Length: 443
Image 1 (cartoon, one colour):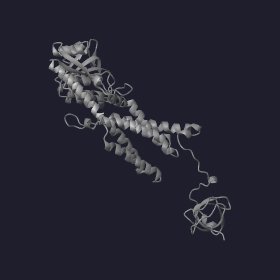
Image 2 (spheres, one colour):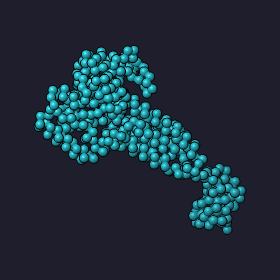
Image 3 (cartoon, helix red, strand yellow):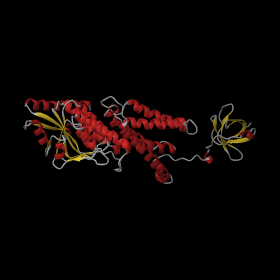
Image 4 (cartoon, helix red, strand yellow):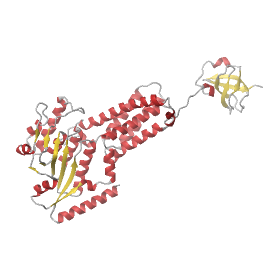
């Protein structure tokens, strides 16, 4: 995998060097025409890295989005601000909400005829305006980003105004210093920047390996939520049913699919996986070893949730460029984990209740009832009354087995002095300790 990436990077660098030797400026084009989420964040960050690897003269960020998650947008913004070369935003119709923040972080902005930029008010999943605490944070990000690029921070702040939110057309954006020109395509943008046709545009999609595409697909937030439900739901059903069956296999598959892309993209660290395993161990101890449900079980649940959430967080994004700590990258991962866990447990309860009474359940988990008629018994008390009484070996005694009393009870027993007694042999009870009888054959 690493060798293939290096080989492709070498080919890209070779192509760029060839273009540079011909006097052509190289534009590395990254498409951002989707909802801003974790997958979009990794795509832009990966594109900026590849642009640096091939020594591209410019990064052309082709934007057409209505926004998305604030934490992912903040991560993209930070990556753009840290990038050493010039980044050019081409608003290929819409740069709304989080898209506006990302556009303002670029060194220059070009817009397509009929496009808009702005409307960065923070809303929830249902489109409802969030409290002023969130708006204040977004206004601060918009101001600081605009100042970093020499733009009027008051215009950027107005895009978050809940009373009279600002959206700009290309002409209005040019008048306020938020657009360098109106272009109809990426080639027009490159021509406007270079002042001539001496340029070449490389598309990031051409440099992606099958591993990059697979990881990008698995990082989709919806799929990540499904994997979380597989993990938690599978563990819950496995605990609630006897034996080891399909639920455990589903949980393991969910864990592999969940952690693998995060490890490849270096979002998850090995200590986070170890933390996840430690949480499972705590839960298992609470269920199988410690009676009741207390500190150990609750601690295990908390540790599992934290490990799953930490695995989704890019730890480098917890600190802003000025060194201050921010919890914004934590909000979305924790929310996904908590919601997915709740849905998984709720769904698992329904599955167990609906399927347990059907034959289909036999293909999912082991179903076995431990009936006393078949010789299964728990710890029995009050066996002292059987001292000196005759019993019959219910199984072969080697020297332990089961005996049947005169009233039909089947009890664990052992031959006091060892040896062997075949099934049906009459024995005499010598002692009763901790729910077990100790016998000897009758002379």
